[in-house]
Image 1 (cartoon, rainbow, N blue to C red):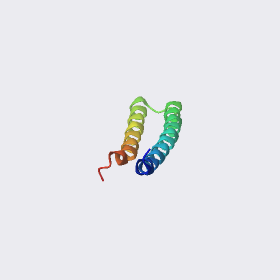
Image 2: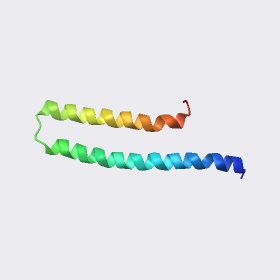
Image 3: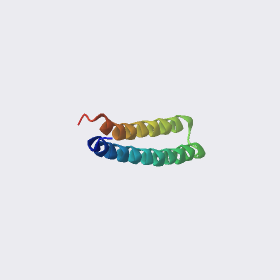
Image 4: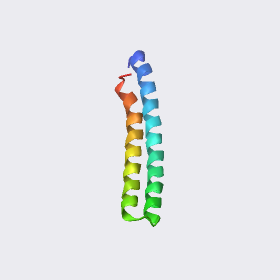
Length: 73
């Protein structure tokens, strides 16, 4: 295997491991927040609004994490 290819692959693997760890932690946080929203006695429209806000925040964080993989910057 060419050393140049290997040298370029190491940062990519490191970035993917970092993203994987962040996604796992984010999933745990979302699970706890989702559970807390269902455990609190919120009226129906406010509970759904809170769930939609959680989903939007998670999607924005995932987009922020995955955009560096495109190498557009």
